[in-house]
Length: 539
Image (cartoon, rainbow, N blue to C red; front, side, top):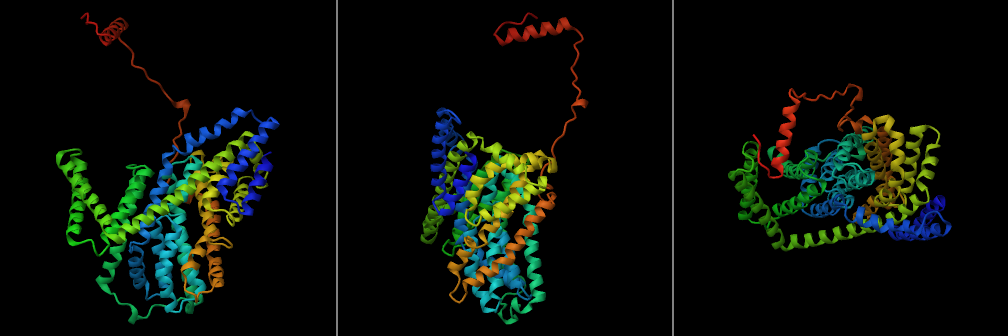
């Protein structure tokens, strides 16, 4: 039965049926057949609704998905990307490949605050691609760097993929975020080194911006750079800093990021008004005062007044955002996008629960474990096989579908095989980050690379589809190099994680305070018992 279920799943997904309904139908159909064949009693199927309502719909961690989606939808249209790309383009303009460097760096910064590939690719392509075409950049390089920089958001915290993988692997989101920072930085360095190599080998592909076209210089240029970077840094701290410092859960961090995105969008809108801006800056000053007072006089009256002023400023900015017609439409569209993605995730989770319960009931887990453990090469053979399998299955499946279908089946086997290499606590974090790096390629390679579709949808007609697809291949190669580096050097994932606490039981000593007068101790104990029942002391 397990091979039949697994093969049926692959066949139906290749045919093109919606994954959520395929999973649910296949799981229930095979469940009824399994009951008839005696694999398990009919009562076993009661675990399906129990797990759906007990583990899926009541899972507070999944609330982070709509919050991060909403935040990314707001930031897509608030003008932050435009300012950052313009200022960074002028900052790196004198260098060959300067526009490529600016796209990579801005992609990294936006990836840390948006968390959505579509928003990032579309925003950067609309802004940067016409500029690159104007300065005669090679079209394969231009389209490739834009698509690849958009997929950076899949790996850079607060990535939605990391949130979903943390939930499916049973690890904390904070550990997944810490583990992803090393590969994220290495990926940026790989992209920059590739651009530098292109500027050396093919300098005509990535020309510098002419001096007469660089309109900003000196403090004016740095001011515009900071105007984009500082708000992004504040938003990154609201989402990631509070989470990594233990001040907020992933859901609370996502909620603060969503509110922060609305405030940032309102602050950047020209119709906000000077009075509202003064209220905002008063609130920010009050927040700074509250941070200082919190160290020395937490919960004191001045601290509470400062926090109240900060809250009033935030609420006022949200009210003003709702009053401005353009922002109101933006917020409505963000709600619609969030609703669609959240509904899709929930339906996939319900379907995958139906499938996984029946699959485990027919001993699918031991069958899969035996098959994967018999792969030649031990741990490294397992990792190579899994990554090759995920790479090719990503030609046809979205990362949500892979995370909810494939990862729960592989997680127990990965924990068993990888624990001797990096330790039990870090094994699934290493495995999850490795899969996250691999899943980036699903947005880049044909035939269903969504980043390429997004780019094709907004690119001018002069840009050939062949340029987009051929331009993506070198960047997919760089992402696969990063997969190999994560496999070969797990320390880049585990170096930020807490060291596991080991206790030598042979050296544990238990010391008990000896009573000098046993009779007196017994009398004191009797006194305490009498007092607990309302009796009077005999002393």
